[in-house]
Image (tube, rainbow, N blue to C red; front, side, top):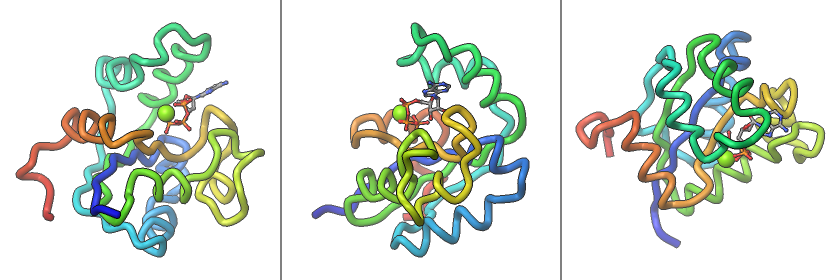
Length: 140
Ligand code: ATP
Ligand code: MG
């Protein structure tokens, strides 16, 4: 297995409830290293671009509104098999279906307000990291 980087967002429902530290602890306990992070207020344009793949879905408007409703923490995570590992640590999109001990099981409020994002492939990880970070931001 290779060392990979993946992109993470701690979403507004979690930053609003002061869950950034708890989520970061779960990430680190899983063996993933936080090599860059920044707390930002996402703009409407950033959220629309980020979730462009879902533009035709009925929940797109709600999703963009949610992602811009409060600050988020954007992160780069690094580790062995980081993309798949972080998806495992996050748990299923719908917290009702998320496994015990996952971030979404412990923290998420609903399928929409589900506390975290993680890239779903190495290719998307690179694109998503590039939307929010430059190479100089990342302490390898
Ligand atoms: P993410 O891309 O945020 O990591 P995911 O890959 O688990 O989540 P996707 O199918 O890519 O899930 O959906 C993107 C996001 O859109 C979800 O995380 C959730 O916030 C929102 N979403 C997905 N399905 C629904 C739905 N049925 N109703 C409301 N919001 C939804
Ligand atoms: Mg996704």
